[in-house]
Image 1: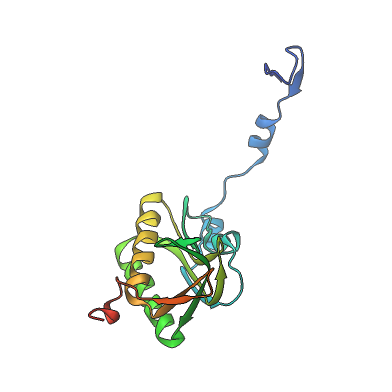
Image 2: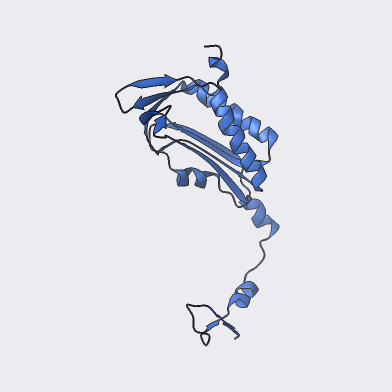
Length: 189
């Protein structure tokens, strides 16, 4: 059995550790083509609107694939201010049948433009306190460029096309429904 000398501040130079990497490599077999094919999963589009708190970890886990080397995320959170006013929370409403349909279209557009594996688009409804996520978008792909570009496209398209309304609730008991300047169906108001 061979050994490896470790020279690091947490080890003395005399300390020797067994090197079992060669044994592990020798005992590990290359996956057969059949095993690789069995691992290949169908692309998924996961869309959810919920009143529950969103979890970045849970959403990102939904898009992980052994075929992908990249998972890109966008997390939109409630900030504590807008135009000098102290924001304490946001409130979201959506016309769900149309919102879900528009997000499906966004997923289809992404698949036409980039080679991505899985897409997850989650949006919170109801009250969202400061610092909590209101939207999480996750995309996996073999390489980072596709997933990064797809995530950017997804949030920009969501803002433009999806019927979701946002009300800012301010500390001084006032609130204000916010017009989305990017939204095509609200243009001209």
